[in-house]
Image 1 (tube, rainbow, N blue to C red):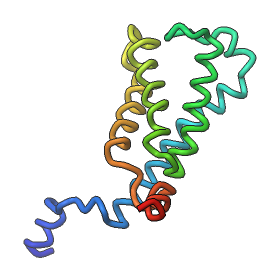
Image 2: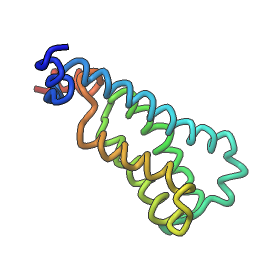
Image 3: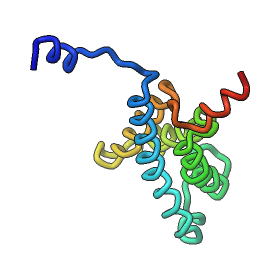
Image 4: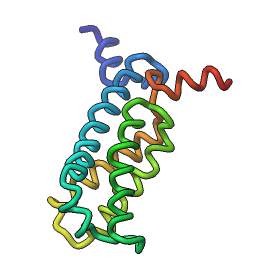
Length: 145
């Protein structure tokens, strides 16, 4: 490897419009969207057991809170994975993780709150970065411009 190759490997400038960068964003959307969705599907499968005892952190009732979490974890995750209404889908996902971190697990040890912190961090970063080229939003933006 030449000196220039080392420099490019270690200090290459990020090209946020490249296909490779968009492919990484697509991969991240699919992986984290699927993982987050799996939490919602597990809750949905256990609906009767969970809905009756679901916490009411925002004063709307446990059942309403449960439906809102299912919406965020299943439907919004699906939109997140597709990159469809990407940032709009992320708002309920971020809100759900904020409630999980700062309300539901506020006094819990780090090991219990760590997954919610990781999801919250990823969702905020993805909100800032955007869905990338390989997304429905990118296709739609071509028709709206």
